[in-house]
Length: 216
Image (cartoon, rainbow, N blue to C red; front, side, top):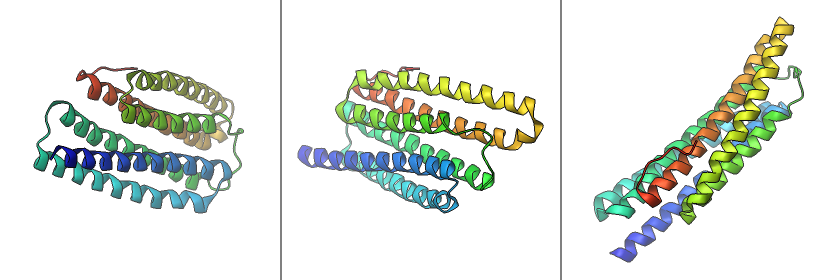
């Protein structure tokens, strides 16, 4: 029974990592659609999100079956509980990527009011945070989980820079208000994705130690 439980848990971990990879891909696709003003790719993001939602439901169902049939205790139960929490954060990251795609569709082929430099930087950082947080989960690595919080601080700083620049542009020229507001929204969506990655880091620490603590 124990060997069967471990095998099922390993399978859940594999599916969780697959979901994480899909989230990294959807963040990249949403950002690329924005920077290239690729309407077709922006629409593709919706399809990608549907697949993430399907995998979330599959993992959740298997977690509940595992709890019901194996009745895990202590650390094993924390691991399964952590998986359930993590897939929720991953699913919400996908939703934020869809929000970016929505803004991209709204902007369309309208010329950007400023070169998009910081937004792609934020997106790459958030992708790396997702990867790092899931790596921490697989390795039960508290130190690595803590690093995610440091990355989140950098994302916050970039967002503050974007916000300040765009607010100033709106003050200087009211005709830029609509697009500037949309770009601020995109920065906010990326900042929220980073927050969800930080949540995963916190969940890893709980899984390992049994103590809930904020790392940012």
